[in-house]
Length: 66
Image (cartoon, rainbow, N blue to C red; front, top):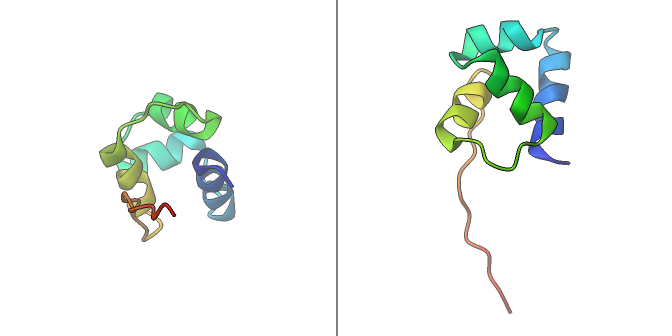
């Protein structure tokens, strides 16, 4: 599942509009729209502001290549 899909499903699960999610997480509604549409360049700190509303956080992870 892509990040934008995940955010949209969490928002729907909590019965929030994009505007409500933006207001509660402290980001702009345009950011939420771009995030849910899968914009390839979004700010990680803003993504984490949105995820924090759901008690989650996104961070880089090392990929082990064989």
